[in-house]
Structure formats: C-alpha cells, structure tokens
Figure 1 (spheres, one colour):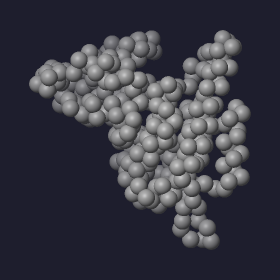
Figure 2 (figure 1 turned 60 degrees about the vertical axis):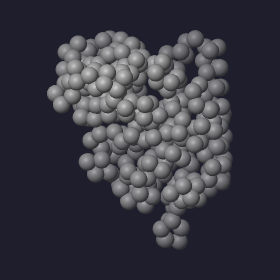
Figure 3 (figure 1 turned 180 degrees about the vertical axis):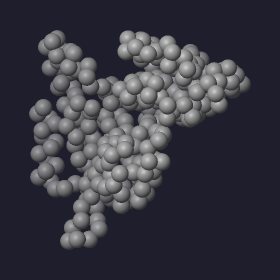
Length: 274
C-alpha cells in the first residue's frame, strides 16, 4: 500500500501543497491582525488542514451512517490528552453514565475525562444555540461511545459535530482516538478528514499524516483506488490544492499524481497570493 500511494501521489507534490497552505494561513493571520473588522470573517474558518476526497460514485448508505476512525502519526490535539479537558458522551441505554465512570475507574481512570453526558441530557439541557456554544467552549475535545455517534449530528447540530466532536469507543481507546481523525462519508461524492492543525502540527508532520490518512481512506471506500476520483488539501476557508486526480489516458484505466505541471503551478501560486 505504501509503495502504491507514493507512486500515485509524489511527496514533492504534497509538500508544495502543504507549504503553500501554511504560507497562505500565516499571511491571512497577519493581514487580519491589522484589520480588526475582519476578525468576525476569520472566525468562520478553523485551524485544520483537510484532506478532501472525491469519489467516482456515491458511497453505499451503510458507509455513511457513522464516522470512520483514521489513525494519524501525529495528533491534532495541542497537548497530550491527559492534560486536556475532555467530555464523554454516552447513549444512556446500552452505555450509561454510571457504567462509563465505572469502566474508566476500573482502568485507573482518565483524569482528563471531566464529565460524562447522556444523550437525553444533551437533548433537554442544550437545545438553544447559546447553550450549545457554552458546551462547545467548555471542553477541549468530545468523545462518544460507538452507539451514540450516529445520533450526535441531530442532537448537537452539524457545525458543532464537524468542528468539535472527536468520537470513539470507550475506555482504553480514548488515547488511540486522540491520535486519530474522523472520516464522515457524505451522502454525496465529496468528503473530508482532518490531517493537520495550524500551530500544532508542522509541515513534515502534516505530510506524514496525509499519507497515513490516504492509506486508511483507500481501505474504507468502495473499490479502493479505483473508486477515488481525486484528493485535495485545504483549510476550510482556502483554495483546495490538488495532490491526486484519476486520469484515463488513451481510454485505459490509470492514475496520475496531478493533471499537469501547468495546472499545479497555477493553483499553488493562487494559494500563495490569496
């Protein structure tokens, strides 16, 4: 697998895209610091670099019902999880708050899990936007038991879910989840997974995360490489820079690292100038 994806996606291509995005982000932050009126616009984005993928066909519904964990070589959390303020969400039926606390205590406890919330409490106590915003700001990351994950978008809202919730199984998997990202396959052909974070992961670490994520994504999607149309890298509010696009030269099946050098240079230059 490693040889296959590095043959298809050259490291130099990924490096240029990552460096262009980081330079664009730095320039934007410097520009916004000189124009306070743009702070509200800046808040619309986030600090994550995304690996976006476009499939050739809409994925089966079974693959879109719950997020897929994507292990990363470098964590996107700003600190080790033991020093962070984490919230664990349980369904309250198959896994109750009491059983979750007992399970954590049996393994020595996790000092970073400061609160366990049931879905029913989320529904009753966090209905308004303001209450959800307060919850959003109260924790560094959110986790959920596997059976609670599919219900979270309706309870918390899609924006909260995509930006803040990192969901996993319980107990010993918390540490593993802290070194992972999520792939939420959409009902369409386009999806994305976080692979870097401004101020947390450096350029070389992001590149390694990109390849780790690609390996896992290819395992998940139907038909593996044959089912993937293209990969891009982007911030939520930046241009999407292509790093792989499927080509069919001469009418035969095949892949290419990029559509062409001219197009690549044009896209990368646009990201630098924006």
